[in-house]
Length: 267
Image (tube, rainbow, N blue to C red):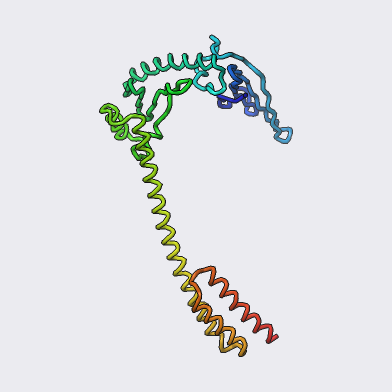
């Protein structure tokens, strides 16, 4: 399977009508670098042409493979040997990252493999075939029922990890409980909105029914005997009808038909 694992931003080093970018394609244990060139021909009805050529090719574990590309490798596409190589690279990178975070003064829980920066909460996951840094910031926001990351919230999270009040499993439970609570709140809000809308619709329907009744009563004396009987029958239907917009539309149409029939009789 072939997939793009990284794409650089387009840049125009020579002319505004010519753009370049690089794409890194993973095919199993191989990483291939392609250089793309998009050329716009303004004198040819703004036709675009895209050219590409293979620039470099590496195999996982190749000493010349740029170190940063290991971060974007898709684990599921790797062979067993490729997974072992990437796993070893990420374990070594984990030690390097940990020292780097320590130098920056970030909170580190080595036992739980948690790092808390100014804006992110990271967890090093070794429970997968190939270990990786997992950004659990969204999970933590759900667990603490917060929309935004604030210094106060990060201090609270650090304190809870320091006092062993929380761990990953507890965070998952807290997040699930908050999700359920928020879902219930949303249902209550929607139910209240629906109730208010139904009340509003009912009040509008009542006004429409009253106006229809008044219009029929006002026009009744101008009709023939047959027309007056039909109006009386319609007024009785209105009295017995459910008050809603759909029913009003039907009754209103019946009233219109009575009037039209009377007009057709008079020529």
